[in-house]
Image (cartoon, rainbow, N blue to C red; front, side, top):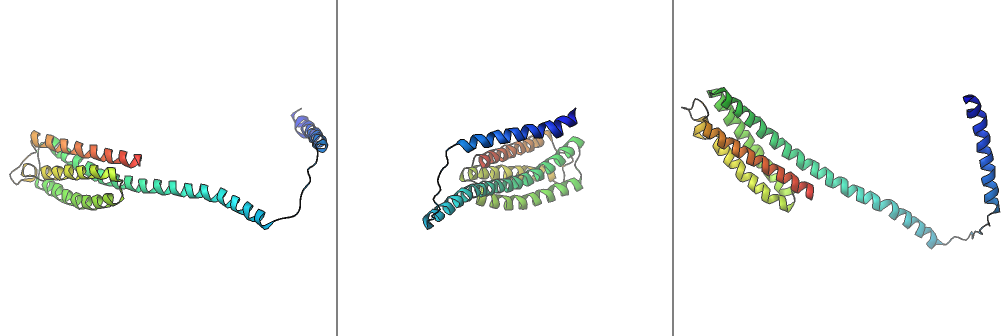
Length: 194
């Protein structure tokens, strides 16, 4: 039965519908065509077609450029954020172990030095490419970073006589780390707005 419907009945119905549409169209009054072509008509058609294609492509390119720039800015923010997360996680492990060894102090010092260099490059790049409203947050982030760096590399953490990170110092480190993350989120929000 399905074979009959598919191969015989459906083509027959399609043929009858096509013939009936043809009869209806045949009875509609015909329009006369003027076969004279003016050069202005050709230019008008070409210009209309060009505008119809060019404007959407231009808008698409502008949107893609903005997305690419924002994605690159987010990538820079994420790279800096990952470095701070890694250092903070290491400090939290040292704090939880209730002892800090010389190798831990050296590691923290080296990582904070690398983070400082990364931050300087990151800050310069972001100042050039971020919207004007985000530059205020970048300056606040710089202040928070400097305070975080000062606490993390202070005598209370990497001093030669220190055997463990005390609660007060670790709390201050955590507070500055949280402030830095807040600033990073604000910068991301400003980038999304613009």
